[in-house]
Image (cartoon, rainbow, N blue to C red; front, side, top):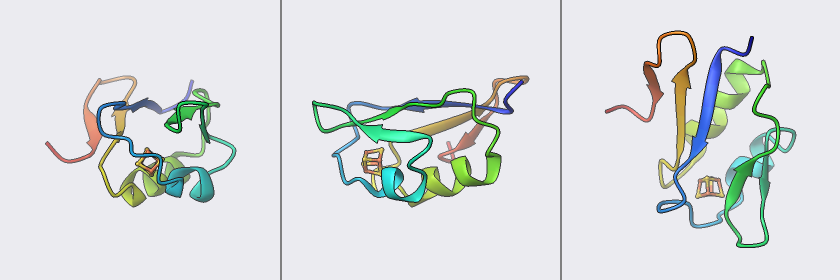
Length: 75
Ligand code: SF4
């Protein structure tokens, strides 16, 4: 089971494409020019976290599936 659950905050995503460049196998820009997760079952934990931390809007929310603890962004 993947460690992380990834959610995009559509109210914050401005379509900068940074996450899609950092991790194109996990994120893609939709027709609305906002990011969405194309591989929610990815096990690329470090890449997921790196992409989330690269988002200038903190629009990528990463939580641990098992504990539901938020990993990024910091509360
Ligand atoms: S880096 Fe952030 S703002 Fe840019 S497309 Fe990805 S989620 Fe949206």
